[in-house]
Length: 204
Image 1 (tube, rainbow, N blue to C red):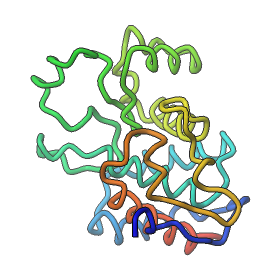
Image 2 (image 1 turned 120 degrees about the vertical axis):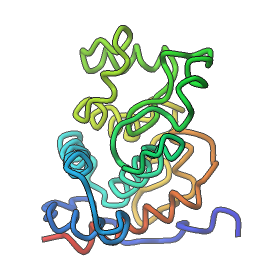
Image 3 (image 1 turned 180 degrees about the vertical axis):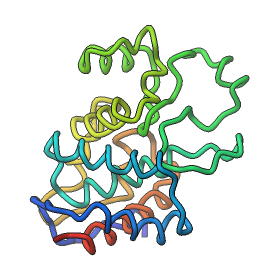
Image 4 (image 1 turned 30 degrees about the vertical axis):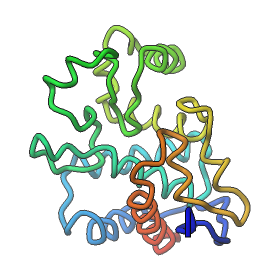
């Protein structure tokens, strides 16, 4: 049963557009947000969709995993912050984050980008001063741009979504290798299926 969840042939939609974004938001609001989403969450969902379009991530399954990754990563229950898909710090107390050797280049954005070398590389690519102002990765537009680029081109671990999602093959449980080790891969795969269902139901 190892890595079986999500590892089976699925229908590939290479050109998924157009998607009715408002319909998509209404569907995930019910399925994943207990019926309530803030304006910042809605803005984040739209920004990620826009970056998928601009950067040519057209496979619904890749888009679904991009949302699932952001949904899982952007959650800080330790600070009583329950909004998901809002760019934030990694889920540790600030006193702990400040004591980490890579501070201030700790996990931020939808992808939880961390490490000085990655901040430098993403800053150079986007012509943003991330090295001197790492909190720029908390900006929705910058975070969504970085998130989709890192997933599509494998800039974090050297592995990209296209290694695990291609043709009629999709392995959501292995996709977490793109950003991290395989911790929580089952939970994120479950989110990906829910986002995928909502996307497919919102095609126009």
